[in-house]
Length: 232
Image (cartoon, rainbow, N blue to C red; front, side, top):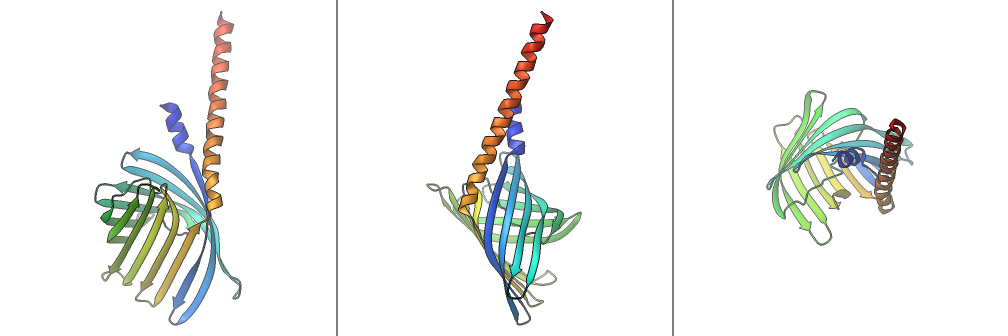
């Protein structure tokens, strides 16, 4: 039991995404290339609830215009799933321009409609929320999930519209397309795709973790045996 909990608490997924962002403001339009490194650490709270910590480090740039924006920061989210509800609550920590996505979704969502609740907290301030009826397509053979939702919030200030399509493979975000626009005439489209070569790092981290823990356990057993022998 102790060994299983220890492995789970330090299991780390290291992934790399590439993509682009399209930003428009009052008729002005600009495109940005995005490269993003994401580290994922998770803990199982219960069978239907996980605590996932995300650390991001990346860059959004337009070489033609000489514009660069550093993406760096850390946040965590609590994700809970029942038969017809998926709730994701983000808590911002030290961050600068991070992208908030549920990079790890360890559930086999059922096909069909699903009520999606997303909240964002910056400290104690509830800074954003989305309540939307989403659609799920689950392929059990390939363990792939497609989650699609849209939300129009007429009571927010500014009024906004957001739509997104998340694709998962084995619980890990494989690609995302998201569009956001608001009444301040801001439009932002983001597309990110997982670099397949980075998936191998997940296995490497797990192997390293198990090897280190095995060495520690063997060392403890050797020390214990020596202590027993010394007392005889």
